Length: 411
Image (cartoon, rainbow, N blue to C red; front, side, top):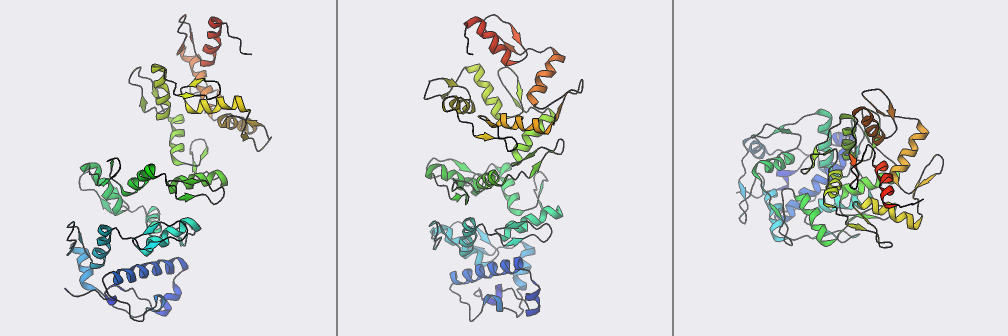
C-alpha cells in the first residue's frame, strides 16, 4: 500500500479564493491543516516547505472519495480490530492504545493526544470563540460545534436509526442513540466499575472520584466539574435567561427549569408516589413527599439540632440563627432570606397574576395560591391532623391547629 503524502490530504485555495474567506473560515482551515500536519508527523511523513496559508495548488484524492460512498474501511487496528477509511485516522486511533499525551496546557497542566484538542481546550481558559455562524451570529469555540449548530437552521436530520426510524442531525448522536437499543456501555470506570454509554458522561463521572473542577468562572473564580454548569453559573452574573415560556413569558436560565415551569400550565404530573398515588410535576417534589410516609428528616441543624426533610428548609432555617437575608430586590432594596420569597415579592411591583383558575377566572401571583383556591371549588382538604383527624385545605392552617393540642405559643 502506498504511503500517505501531503498531496493526498491537502486542501487548496487560490489567492483570490483565500481572500474571499471570512475569519471564521480561515480559522477552520488552519485547524484542519494543523491536524493534517500532525497526522503526517505521526506516520513519519513530512511537510516539505509548505506554509499553512500558502497552499494554492490543486490536487485530488479520487480513490479516498470513492471509499466514502462505498463505506469501505481498509485500515484496521491490529490491537482492537477497529477499521478506518483513512490511514491517518488509524494512526490517530493507535495513540489511544499507547495513552501518550504529548501536548500539555501551560495554564492547568492538562495533557492531550492531539494539538487540535489542546487548542480547543485553551479556549476554555481564554473564552475565545472564533467560529461564528453566518446566519445568526452565534459564536463557538470549536469548528465542529459550529457545524452542528448550522444544522439547527436547516432542520436537516440525515442520520436515521435502522431500528426505530428516529433521525438525527449528527452521526455521533445516532451512534449514542443506537446504544439505547443495544444496551452497550463501552466506557467503564476503573475505580468503581460503573459503565457509561457516552464518553463525555464517563469523563464527568471520573471527576466524582478525583474532585477535579477544571472549569473556572473568570468573574468570581468559582470552579466546576462540567463546562455546562459553568455556562449556567455565568448567567447568575449576566442575568441572562434565554429560555422563555410561550404561555406567560416567564424566562429561565436553564431549559430544564423551563420544562418544569411548563407543567404549571399543562397540569402534567409525571412523578407518582407508589404508596399513596399522589402525583408531582417534579421528581425532587416526589422525593420530598416520600419522606412524609417514612418520617425521615436527614438534614439537621448543627446549632439547635432541629431536623428537616429537605435541605432547602435547613438552609432557610439556618438564617433564623444568622439573620442573613442574601436576596435583595433591585427595585426597592427589600431583602429576603429565601430566593422564592424575593421572586414572589418582585411580582408585587409588576402587578402580574399569571396563574388563573379555569373555573371562575380568578388570577393569582403564585401557583400555590391557585392550588389553594381550587380547593374552594373541590372541597378537598388533604392536610389531616394525626391527633384528632380534623382536615384542612392549607398546610399552614394545619400547623396552627396542631398548636391547640401542644399548647405551643411561638409568637
